[in-house]
Amino acid sequence: MLFPLVLCGLVISARAAYDPALSLTALNYATATYCEESSVESWTCGPACKTLPGVSSVALVSDFLEGTFGFVAYNNQTDTIAIAFRGSFNFINWVEDADYTQIDFPGHPGAKVHEGFYNAYQTLGYQVDDALKTMVGQHPTARVIVTGHSLGGAMATFAALEIRPLISQKIEFYSFGCPRVGNQAFSDHLASVYPDYYRVVHTNDIVPHLPMTSMGFNHAGYEVWYDSDDDRTAFKVCPYTVGQPEDESCSDSYWVYDPTAHQDYLGVDVTGQCFNNELI
Image (cartoon, rainbow, N blue to C red; front, side, top):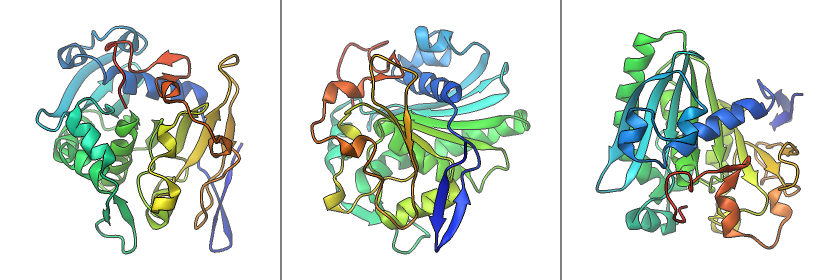
C-alpha cells in the first residue's frame, strides 16, 4: 500500500510501504547500541546480536565525554550496512535532551532544529561519515539502514540527511520512540528527502510527544502506531502531509502518556536487554 504526501497541491507517493520485518530488524540494531561497547564490536551483545547473524564487521562511533554512541556495521548475510545510535545514557545526554533551543539547520533557510539533539549528532558525525565511506567502498552493492531509539532516533535523523549526498546506495530509515527534532520547515525538508521514513511509536510513549508542538516542533515521516500490547502485529499508519502539523489520529490522540512505554517496542525490551536502568 502506498500512502500519499501532499506538496503544493501535488500528491507524492511514498517509495515503499511500511515493512514490519524490516522494522524489527532496524529495532534490533538500535537495541544493540545499549550493550557494552566491546560486546557490540565483537557482535556478542546477547539477544539483539543473536537475532542479526552475519554481522562481520563493526565500526564503533562514540564520544566518551558527551556519552554518545553508535556503530556502523556490515551484515554479509543480507548485504546490509546498518547505522545505529543509542538513546540517552548519562547526565550530559539529559542536559542535551532538555535544551529545547532551536537553531538554524545549515543550508536550508527557515529550517530549525533542536540544538541539543543536533549537537549530540555532531559529536559523532565525522566518525559516521568515515566509517560509512570505508564500508561502502568495501561493499558497494549493500543497502543502508539508518536507525535509532529515543535520542538515537533524533541522531539518526541527522545522519540520514547527512549521508544522503555522500552515497548512491538505497537508504532505509526507521526510528523508534523518536522525539520531535525540528520545526515545520525542517520536517518538510526531511519528508522531501525521505518520503518513506517511518517513525514507530508504542502505545502512549511520552517521548515522541516531546518537545511540545507549542514550542515550535513538529514530527516528520509516517507514524506507525502500535496501540496494543495484546496484538503485537496490529498497527496503524498515519501519513505526513507537507506543510501541515502531524496527524492527530495516531498517538497524538492520547492525552495521558506513560514513560514506561518507551522501553518496550515490537515486543522487544529495548533498553533492558543489556542495562537494567531507565534510559531515554
